[in-house]
Image (cartoon, rainbow, N blue to C red; front, side, top):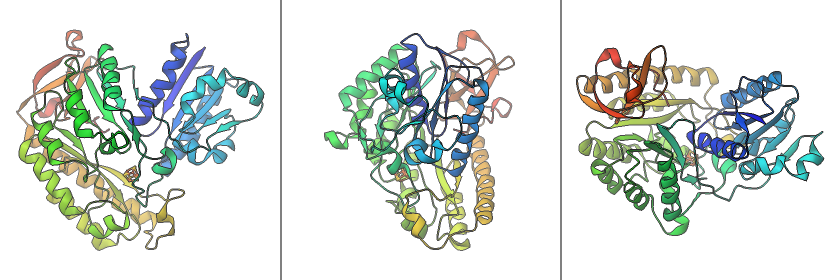
Length: 426
Ligand code: SF4
């Protein structure tokens, strides 16, 4: 059986797609490129923005064009929240929500599927409540390791708690055991991913801080990155630990979402701008070279011009290295749908453009601060027109002529303008 998979959205989805695919591969299936003919196409979807939904539709059609007889399975967040809408798209055979998606292989082999073959099989009604540790494979250099799922925060703009259920995770012992398995694959760098990573362990009376200390003891893993952590959950003890740890890198992704206290309140975020600024100050005090990325939403309800100007000034004033910008789009089921103060779409897009320019400026400042410094780079295996690339510990992407000896190795490298590459957006 030939299978092809396409992942939309976050790193968590990448880890989960790998887990689904691995089940088929262990049974003899061969993975092919998504743009080749396959017997089964798996599309792991996202519901964070309306654009992700649009992409999902395009990708389903691409698969159908490759092989008119293939099984097309659409799984994940969009499938969880909008199963009936997906069922309207021609060519889809199986729709599995987040609770059911790891059962794809079992379903295809089951009577359930045999019976439903001439109809669309939908299994997406259940609120996701189980938890599977999973990790992405395919690139030995870097692995996305899902350590947590779900969220209890219900920010007013966000559909993720509806798509992924409440916060949950495995125990520290189970998570560390899986990390050892990842280490045995030869992966050098592990990115800890989750929906609300900082809430790891709550159900077991354990903490994310305890977890990172345990993970740091696995000698074969040379690098860890924390993919994202909420500002109210990145404690001083986590920051101080990372600063002196063996393998945790000086690289943070701390969602900001809005740079105005009024808008943060409307979003039901659990911090204000002064707490956010304090966390960044602490990071930069103990790790002056740290890279700090932030998510920000342009044009949320109630964001007038003065709140937007305030947000731009706030971002200017704090040591953010660059932004991930999302143009606000209404998501199903969210409290924001009932709120007033909607910003016209053209204005949202204009603010998004302003934020992109601001982000580019912040990134240049960050790069310039490190020009001439020597930092460790983990070199990746891709040979692109005779060049190889890799990230420094603080997430600056560098390139050099391809050298097979350096693949999956960490070597010191002097940062100069001509070896920085720009393809490092997450
Ligand atoms: S913290 Fe807020 S934005 Fe993040 S997943 Fe939870 S509800 Fe969504």
